[in-house]
Length: 148
Image (cartoon, rainbow, N blue to C red; front, side, top):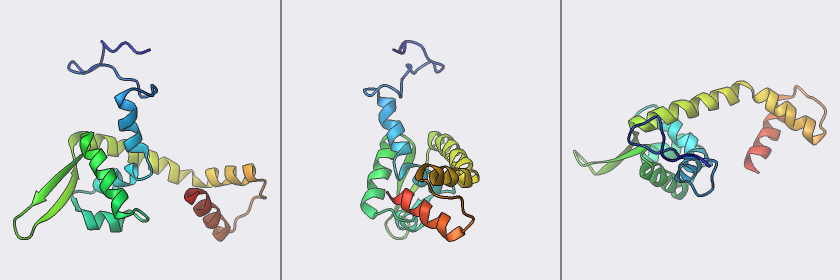
């Protein structure tokens, strides 16, 4: 059990994301869920309108993106800004905390992308498939496993 009376921040208490009933666990789930990291990564480039985010994050539905943005906004990672200057539209951007989290998320994404050949080789070993340098086979295998 974590001592909730101590923390590195003077106004915060210690949280334990490994505990199923801890609020840090829910925030972590919002970040690491299927669309959390891609959303944070897309917003790291600067303010973006909703439709541009839909186009940027391949495969996300409008409904799931809206839910993801709402959760990340509630957690304090994303800012929703309604613009009324010319025509009414909404832009999403990262808060300072969101930028900090996005930087870590992008670091993890970069690490994964640099080591995808190792990951795919591990998949082939686990599936009993002989090593292959065929790019199409690797792409099909990765798409199958990522979509599952």
